[in-house]
Each structure stands twice: as structure tokens, then as C-alpha cells.
Amino acid sequence: MKDIIIVGSGIAACSLAWQLHFQGKSFVIITDLKKGSSAVAAGVYNPMVLKRFTAVWNADIQLTDLNNLFDDILKSTSVELRTPITVARRFHDNKEAQTWVKKSARDDLKQFMNPALESMLIKGIDALDGYGLVNGTGWVDTVQFMTTTISYFKSLGSVLVDTFDYDQLDLSTDALRYKDITATNIIFAEGYRILGNPYFKDLPIQGSKGEVLLIKIPGLVISHIIKSSVFLMPYKDDLFWVGATYDREDLEDVATMAGKEFLTSRLERFMKLPYEIIEHKHGIRPTTIDRRPFVGHHPQHKNVWIFNGMGSRAVLIAPWASLQLINCMFKNQPIHKEIDIKRFA
Image 1 (cartoon, rainbow, N blue to C red):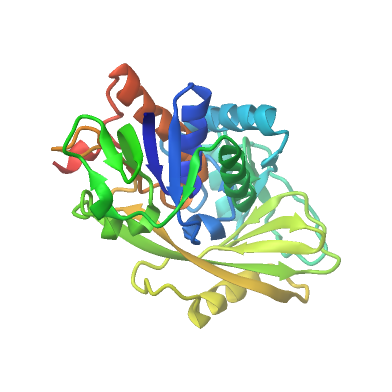
Image 2: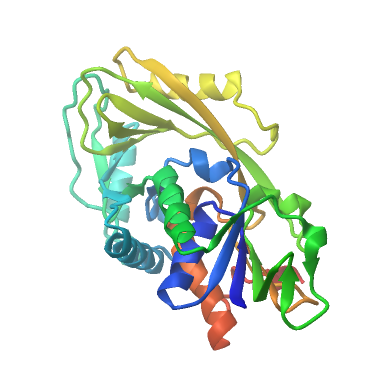
């Protein structure tokens, strides 16, 4: 019998699987391997909300747990999935630059905000008022993360490739059963597919379509992620990611011309080199009305759990949130009240 059944294989589910593995818990991942929002996530981790120069909620703890997790994954797989790289916030005017300097002295922000303004001269990039540099940032190759995770746990016999059928889940005994698998608990980490989950369909999920572009810019050399109204992130060779959109109205599962035009128009405000669009990707993020994840158990079925709603910051928040869930399940510790689904009781 397994300790856990995990349903899903996105960023949240993979983070949870590794944390369980490192704590010696047995589990099986059930996934149909279909693309979700994690497959198009650029994977940037950044402790700042750079539109308003504020810190992400709980950012210092989340960064620590993220780095601890990917250090452990590297030791287990010899695959480096994380690329530390500084985010450079491009200032739109001198007023923004002075606001940056002022806020960087605050006790809650100075660990993340470099107070020295940076005036990098990058051919093809318009940034007359300079940049503010953010500490502790980088990106995770999300596609490689998910591929490595599934491959690793497949080799251990801990992955079932299947479309989950809720009707096959038997909760009539203490040890729940799904087809020929028995387990003590089941955790649903399905992303936006939560809408079809009969156990958690009433939680106030809000989808947010995100679109990104992979573009080729011959000759552009940058050693930072440039964040303006969109981000420009070096990927490999002459390829760069541009993103992202946040659309809560149009949740049709297709990339849109409007999304493409938004990204290119914002990019061209500061990037003055010719470029070629290589790929236009999209996904629907599972977001919540209060921008906090859904973590906890079903009100009637105490061994049926949810791990969802990580939104656009899944790479940053999922390693920490997964520990919250695991510590509740196995150590009877309370889940942080701001992510516990009891807040919607």
C-alpha cells in the first residue's frame, strides 16, 4: 500500500513528489501527461512584485525552500534544473528610479533590492533611466523539471500514465482504492482541471490565461532577465522568452492574436532589434481569488487532499507549500492559515 496517490504532473505535483521522496514517503503519480499551464511557464522565480516594488508574500522562506529542493534534486539526478540569473527592472523614468532607491532601504525589502542603480549599456535595448537589480532570482527549466521528475519516478515504478477516472476512486474503507492501487491518502494537484473534480469543484478557482513567445534575436547578448512591462529572458543561443499575459476573461484553450500583439508591442517599446517569433505558447493557470494556493483536505473525506492554485509563481511557492501539506499529513502540524482551504469553509 502507498502512502499517497498524486494526481497531476505539473510544477506543483512534481515539487510535491520530490518533497515526499526526500522524506521517505511512498507514492504513485497518476498523469495523462497532457500539457497544462506548467508546460508553458517560463519558470522565473523572483521575490519581488516589480510593478509596485513590493515583496512577494513569504518570499524569504519560499526562496530558501526552493533552493533546498533543487539542491537535493541535483544530488539525486545530476541534472541542474535551476539557473540563477539576476532580474533587472528597467525604469520607465527617473521618478521610478528614485522610488527604487527609497524603497530599497526598507527593512522588508533591502534583502531583495540592490540599492545601487545600474546603467547597463546593451546594444538594442532602450533603458535611458537604468535598472534596479533584484537579488536571489533565477529560472527553472519547467519542461525539463517535469520530464526529469516523471522519468526518475517511472524508473522507481512510481508513475501510472492514465487519465484519472473519479468514478474509480473508492473511499468506502480507511485505505482508499483507485483501480488496483491502495493508498492512505490521495492528493489532487491537477491545476485548472480542478473544475472537473467532484471533490473540490466548489472552491473559487479563477483561471488566468498566460501567453509567452519564444523569439530569436541574432546578436543580442544579455546576462540578466530584463523586466519592463514584459520580461525578456535569455534562453539559449539567440533564443529568448518574452512574457507574459494575464487574461481572466478569455479562457479558451488557444493562443490568441491579441496576446501576441500585446507581447510584441510591449517588447518593442524597449527592444529595438529585429526578431523572429519561433513559437507562441499558452496555458491556463489555476489562480485563486485571494492569490493564495488551495492546500488542505476535503471537509468530509480527511484522506482526500488538494494542492492547487499556485498561479504564476508556482516555481517559487510550490516547494514551500508542499512542505506545509506534508507536515500537516504526517506530523499533524497546521497548514498556514492563508493557504488552508478552511478559509473558504
